[in-house]
Length: 204
View 1 (cartoon, rainbow, N blue to C red):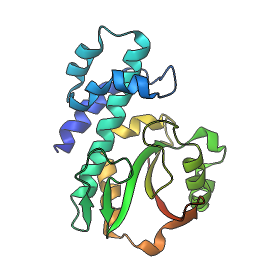
View 2 (spheres, one colour):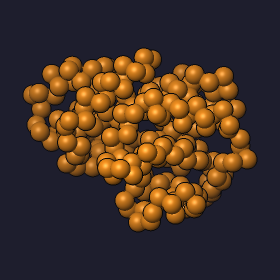
View 3 (cartoon, one colour):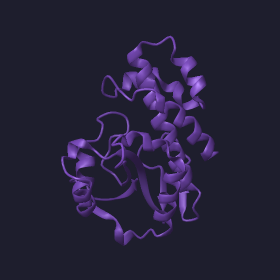
View 4 (tube, rainbow, N blue to C red):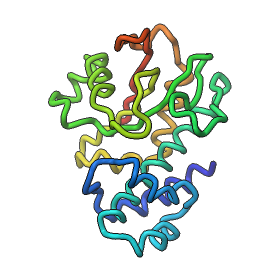
């Protein structure tokens, strides 16, 4: 994947408001699945032009989040100790690090956590538990191993824009994988056995 090209395309989306209008739903996901084969913002704008404003916003956000996530997965997969999952329909595993399976989720620092970023960094397990318990009820909901990439922009508080900072994500993911140790993972149990998780912080 040409990461710089992806970053350039994602940054072109930043001029449009980031609003969902409604919660994610399986029906609207199905109506906007063209995002998976749309590689430029220009092509995306052409495809969403006939749609309602609400569905256009929804498609813009899904496209933006999807390609940011694909770029992150590409970075993980570029490392020797990481095996990418070739089954694109597997919602539980994106890749394995040292044979440990993980799904990955890029999230902005959640307002609903109601505590500071400093508190969250010092109480990582509490935030991870909150993220699992408050995840979307659609699509990729699960209680299996997950790596969270958490974005925080101290300057503008527009954390969502950091999903376009692909090269910054790459630097932090590279550092995480190169120093990866199972001993540093957070262990949880939601009633169905051990779950391993961690947070990669992306801050500016």
